[in-house]
Length: 216
Image 1 (cartoon, rainbow, N blue to C red):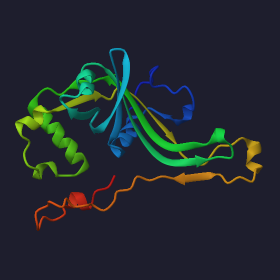
Image 2 (cartoon, helix red, strand yellow; image 1 turned 30 degrees about the horizontal axis):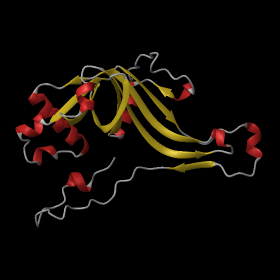
Image 3 (cartoon, one colour; image 1 turned 60 degrees about the vertical axis):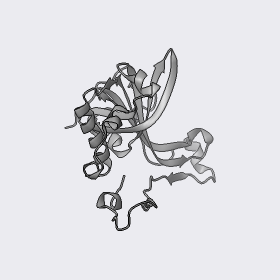
Image 4 (cartoon, helix red, strand yellow; image 1 turned 120 degrees about the horizontal axis):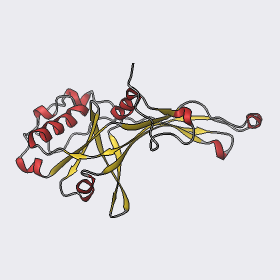
C-alpha cells in the first residue's frame, strides 16, 4: 500500500477536491513521467520561476544548473516550490465556463539543499543522465573537474506534495446537454520523434539502443 503524504495548508486543494492525490505512488509516477519542471523561489522579496529538468531518487527530487546561476545560488537552503505538469487533453464543453484540460500535475514544497560533495554530485549527475538514457553516462567522455565545478545540483526531500489529476469528458450544466454544440476531448500526447544525428558525428558511429528506443 502506497504511503500517504500529510495534507498541509499549502498542499490541500481549495477547489475540485476529488482531483487531489496525496499518495507517493501517484506523486512519483507523475514526476517520473515528465522531466521538465518549474522551480519557484523568492529573492529580495520578489518571486521568480525557473524552468529546468528534474529527476527523482527514492523520496528525494533533484535539479541542476549553472553554478553561476542566481536562481540556484539563492534556492540553496531556502524554501522553494517545484511543479511538474503534463497536458493530456483539451476538454471542450458546451459553455466557456466549463472548458477545461485533462492534465496531471504535482506541486512540491520544501527546503532545497545543495549537493556539496564532488563525488556525490558526480553520482547524481550520472543518475540524472541514465534515468533518461539508460547506460549513456557510462560511455561518455569523463567529466572534467571544471565540468563539476561549473554545475550545481540541488535536492529536496519529498515530504510536502500534492498531485492533481483531471480525466474524462466535459461536465456541463444539465440543461446545456440539449444544446446542438459539439463537446468532447481533444487528446494531447507528448511525442518523441526520430533521432537527428549531429552532422559532425564520426563516420561509422552507430545509433545506440538508448537513443533508438528512447520513450517518455
